[in-house]
Length: 261
Ligand code: SIN
Image 1 (cartoon, helix red, strand yellow):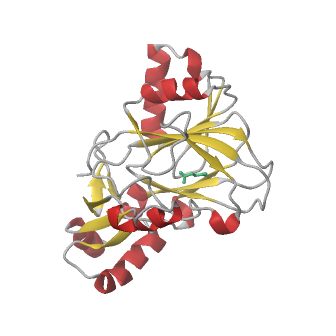
Image 2: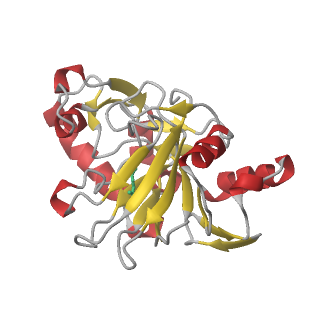
C-alpha cells in the first residue's frame, strides 16, 4: 500500500489496495488512515454496485437519501452531470445535516470521469474552528443551528413543507477523535436556534466564508476506478462544476453517524 498526502490540511491518496479483498488487519489500517487524514482516495478499484455496498457496510449501517436513491439500489445515488446550472452539489456542504443523526461518512465510486475538471474540493472544519479568535469561538460554542432540506426538496419536486429538519450544535465534537469542528453549511443551515433568519445571516455568512478558506482545503481530481470516502463530521465538500457537458458518473453511499454533540 502506498500513501501520499493530498494537501497539508487533509486527505490521502492510496494505491495498491483492493477493497474487495481487505482482511481485518488491513481494514484496521485503512480506518486508522481515515481517522488521520479524513479523506481517503483509493485508486484503481473495480467495483460492482453490490461490492461498493458491501464495502460501505464494513463502516456501519447505510443511510438512505430522502430523495435520490437509485431504483435498483436504493442505498446508492447515481451522480450524473446534470449541467452546470442544475448541479445541486456545487456548494460547500456536509451531507444530510438536516437529519437528526447525519451520516458520518460518504463514499463515492467513479465510473466515468471528465478527464479534466469535475474535482471534489474538501475543507477541514476542525482547522477552521481552531483558526477563529478566542472571542468568536466562545460565541459559537454556545450556539445551535437549524438545518433543513427544504431547498433540496424543491429541486426533487418534493414538498418543502415536509422536508426533514434538525437542530445541531454549531461546533461539534468528533465522537472518535474528540476534535472540535465547525458544523454549519450554506446548503442546509438556515439560522441559529433562538435567532431570526435576519439576525443569523451576518454571522452565518462569515462562518461559511471562513470555513471555505483556501488554506483549509484539498481537491481530488477523479479517475475512473477511484473510491473516495470522507468524514462528514469534520469536513465540508464542494463538487466543482467546471467540466461543461463532459460526462461524469459516480455512485455515492452514506454511512450512519451519531447525532452531533
Ligand atoms: C456530493 O456533494 O455529495 C457529491 C460530490 C461530488 O460529486 O463531487
